[in-house]
Image (tube, rainbow, N blue to C red; front, side):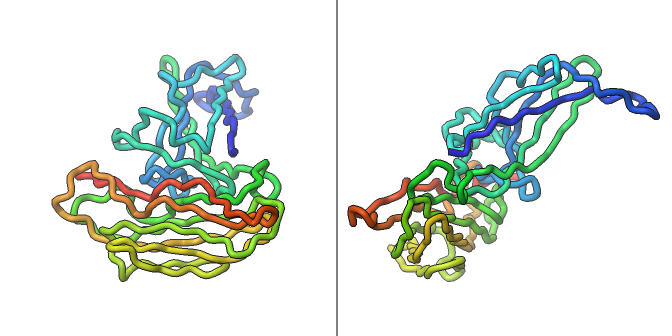
Length: 280
């Protein structure tokens, strides 16, 4: 469970800056916390950020203490439960959870100054340490989804391509054979443009009416993981209403056979990759 506490420290910058800098002076005020997203509700790195989303959910921010510090507890695998969030355009947004293993996640601390004090921003990536090969205390098979490329807020009539990555990790105490991960694409996407690349094992694409079903099968040694990258393309109809959510994938899950009981075990479902139609 990748839960973190983010602490910020705010100092008063001398104006004008003296030749010999004195000891920094903590400053009072409030701090707000934003998380970097790809514009689709998926937390991402500062480099890949397209839309900051405020997640502290506290009126006006958190007051700094006498040392200029503010602390923010962040439940990364509970982000989807945060209600009332808005994106950088002021539109409602639901964040997707971050689960182990995880890539760098970007955060921005925004200082809300007092009186004539200036606001300042800090942007930095945090790589969540999930311990023991990314599993932490988890002893199950895990699966997580991260959206990596593509316009997250396209206008009606837009044509483009998107990618998302499924990461499956063996956190059980066993080497597993015949692990299977499966999910589908949305019917509005161009079936002929769908492509899948994997770091191990084999992926196949089959059809279920208008939807494509992607299946990965492979072996995972204890602590080993696989990345399944799905590439999709499509055109949004010009008549699509502003604010419409367009799904790029269905929920994914993974299964394996428990070597002790020889019974099938299934992971929880992931969230879905998505975009929101936004009118200029």
